[in-house]
Image (tube, rainbow, N blue to C red):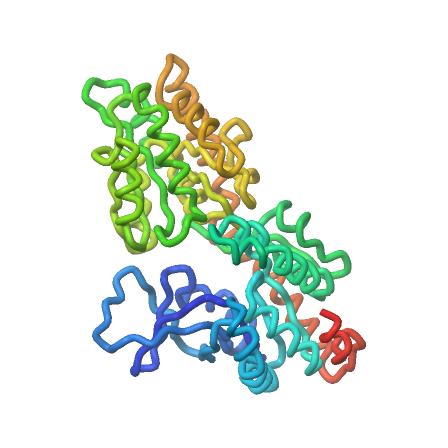
Length: 416
């Protein structure tokens, strides 16, 4: 069975025909689908590079039984008007050859793929991975705020009528984007290896050692430096607000993108010497080693689905402070949450976490809690849940083959 997968993710490709991802969609992700389906076409955005381009921080996405169709972006008004017809043509050709469509939303390419699938009478499923409203409203410009209500309603309509829906959260996205009549499942797109009991033991020892003279408290954050969705500005402002109350500390940021803006902000806030931007590391062991050197992880995001970095930090028994964006409240203790943009609340939480006579006990409690909670996101557990969902969808596609459903009429497409 051949399936088309659609999303706005930008892949990098060169004359060799190989496609690379910025880290979120390596070939291992496609293997999740290939365990059920025979082959996959990825409908996406693309950026051509030279053969000798630096691919540091990027992972190979090409592999057996996976091909790619590169489409123009539809995420700005001009392209929506001038290139939508071309995108529809390419998607029609690709989806005509497929047995079914999997659309990851919110995304413009995913939305178009669903419309074409309905038009052609092809079964489809949606993967709901983030909140359209949060992502656009907090993007940082007027255009995003103006488009947010439209994107919210579009995504709600697409999910509401989907026959199959897979959510990365357990509650948040289900409540905001309900699918009342579809077959549903929740399964994070983040999976981590099983961490041994020694990880927790080492963390507890590290927490105890923080009281020793000369120890530096390491605060950490993982997230792209492009844009403001990860709340780097909130973290910097909160740390600056309580710097006088903290012991010797460093704020370390791991992520791709231009550092200049954030270095200037840190300098303006008077904490430039305490802040370091450390680029990118290969996913897996290198990131886990980095997290083992962090004493307090911060996730003050404006927008999230279910953040990979938070779950990875939890798996290393790291205490975490985070915003209420997306599915973060499903992961960490309520006492560790602040609303997006609440600098003062995060500042108070950092102060309580890093100072005071109850600090050590609190950090150990959070370490044990987070370590135990992270076990819900180990690869074997999620693989079993995900495979069950896609096998059910595969059976549905086989049952629907040759049928004509009123949900797939052109009138139904245009109504969206």
